[in-house]
Image 1 (tube, rainbow, N blue to C red):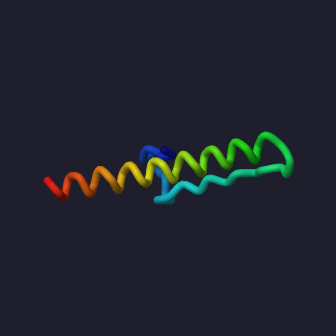
Image 2 (cartoon, rainbow, N blue to C red; image 1 turned 180 degrees about the vertical axis):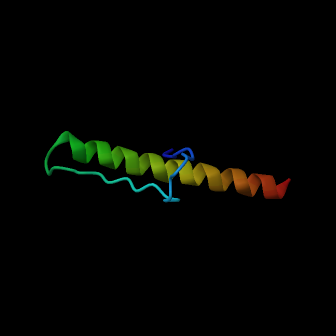
Length: 55
């Protein structure tokens, strides 16, 4: 999870994360792993929400 704590004087509400990836390098594998992790986390969150609603 990426997050930022509130800092005094901070005006932006969002954080932008940019990935600079070079073709045919380990960077591509790392980015794919991060994307896969994100999909799994989203599926888990949705499953927990559905379970909570069912109870």
